[in-house]
Image (cartoon, rainbow, N blue to C red):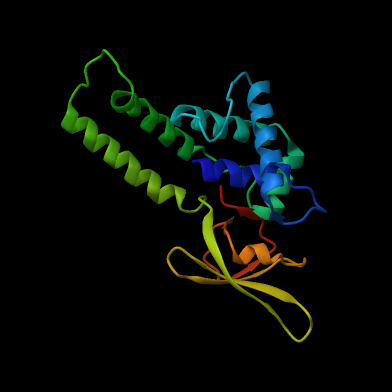
Length: 205
């Protein structure tokens, strides 16, 4: 959840001429922007890192609303991600997160009300989690680990990276590649292609 918020927060704050590789100070900047947008929508969150599950769902909803209210942001997402919404167009992911959140109170809070049926509740939650895992894979950022930077005979630099499943990617961004990409994990937009062009790369929180 936090990876989704931080990663797509980078897209919301990205300007056309700014670098695609997002460093720590930039991440802190767009975290503050996300909290500012939340406050504007009357959701008080002191820190993304310390936010509860329900708050995190609320942050994603506010970010989605922020995109829907701005044709400029919608167009920017369309150019960079191929869609005009932060996540899915029909908001199925948010609906699933809401359902999971409604069950979560039975397990993490000291509630007085009785759980209707422990077995049925557990099966319901498992079913929702499996459904969420299936639907979120197209939106959840891929964690990559830089292996090496190569430069071809034309002077073009590429980052060779692998994900957590050991799949390899060749990443081109048209800008100078910082050696820091080889020392820390980064988040990248999910893709089935081994060749990635102009993806925002966000230092993993």
